Length: 136
Image 1 (cartoon, rainbow, N blue to C red):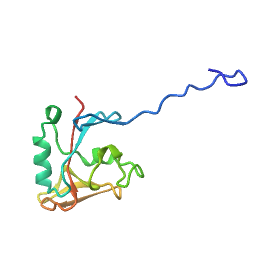
Image 2: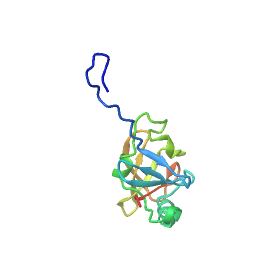
Image 3: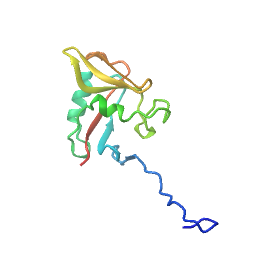
Image 4: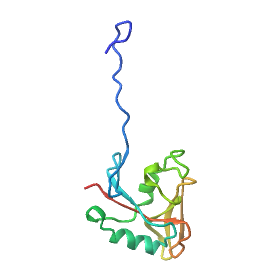
């Protein structure tokens, strides 16, 4: 292509869509190569979240709780009221990770603030569960 003066124009490429959501609810991250699945409800203890992820059979199974690093990679300030892609349709903004802090607490990520933190394993109020796996 050339502009009105005959000079070559830069090729315009369509914007890369980072996340896609399948009919079964699996969200694929084209940047990291991970598949995500949003858990039910918003009041999950760490033990409930871990059991749910490990027993999830959607799209062939192989799910686990994410790491804090993986959760941080989802953070998009201003993308939605809870700072993550709207495809996630999460009913809250604090998500458990699979990483223990010590024998009685585990790490998670607060999407409303962009900060990681830990809570007691038995604390569930407002805590979400996401499952993740390497893309198949």
